[in-house]
Image (cartoon, rainbow, N blue to C red; front, side):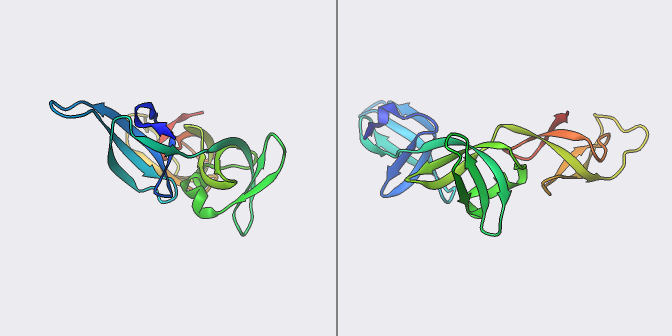
Length: 185
């Protein structure tokens, strides 16, 4: 049990038997009445975001989430296989739990896997990853970085927009939060 005064971003709460992550919180003191804590909570499994207000000093149940660094090995027919870097045990994580992270996973890449009671909840990737471009239309003389963009297919199969001067075979840095091009490597 934790007090709503002690909430932090990223904390996982167990509310009504469901797991919610604190995305944002704010202590609010209205002109009259008691202090309240306004929060934005994201459902761990569905990704649904809700606004919820608690009275100050209300006790809420905190969920124990174990975050482990794991290495992605391969994808079999059932899901993605990760290896714990501490004890070398392997864990298969379903496709729906991995979600959009599959677009940025390469063999032997490290990722943080959040577990609750040995059940994988979600995967945290670094803010950016370096991926090779497998196909894009060739650029033309005069294409500059201030110009437009064109589609490019990455080695994971994800298609993103890149500047016109990028060619097939180059490595680019991609933002894992929104899938946008950051820079050439």
